[in-house]
Image (cartoon, rainbow, N blue to C red; front, side, top):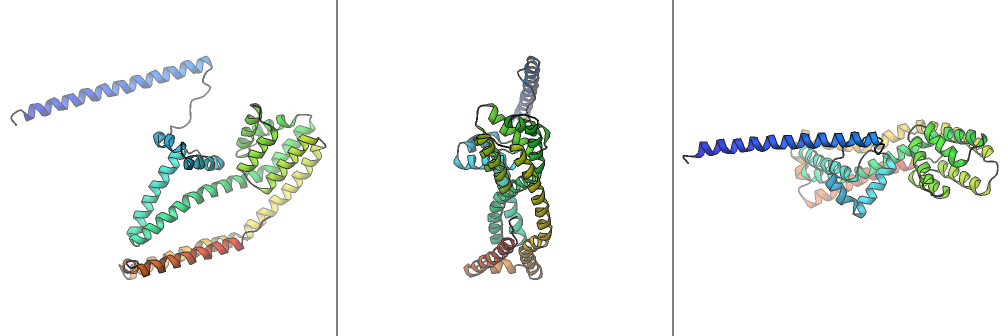
Length: 313
């Protein structure tokens, strides 16, 4: 114990030395990496620096080896989000814990479990919503896409060249998706397979009609320019009709969202007026069962409202 001050000073000095060595090693490695990137760029072996730094790479590598990870990767690729499966899973787990703790603290622990289950469903619903949003944006660009194809084919260009030209001229998401198709054609994939994968990534009746038209024109020949001109006019009319239907059904969609929110508001009001009421209600099996039935009825009501308001144009 007499040498404790001296031992403390020695440990502190050792930690400082190790810290200086670590900082020097990090700065040296960073400088070497930058010099390597600069040499590769000058030699033409590296055209651009990589994108943003990826997080949770270890989790991502392990997750990609599983069936669930590959499924998540396919769904994320269809949405166009700049996420890896590892980042998505970590964010979902963090959100799940946050929802569980927040809802459990505001209402009751049993409601925290329900909130976590809803969070898991919401994570998958978010990907489906992003995919539907991207598909809708692509559908809105189809008239312009067919117009570019018609002009290019009328000028005597091949269909493959016309697709590559459309990929350069159109904005995302059509530009990105058509660039993928052009890259697949460049490495030897057939036009039928490349367009078929495009229709699988962004499923819609309009795109299926366009893909079928292009495939038949590529196989049998014919007046593809006339077909594309007529298809452009039809897509323009369908675009206006879809916009009108969406505007007319916006109030119904808000109602479907407001119905379950009103139920949560009533629960919060009850718990505020009588603190601990929700804990007592969910403290027994009967109360938990009744709560599940109530939430199930709210979800069924919202589903039926959305289902009845869904109109295929």
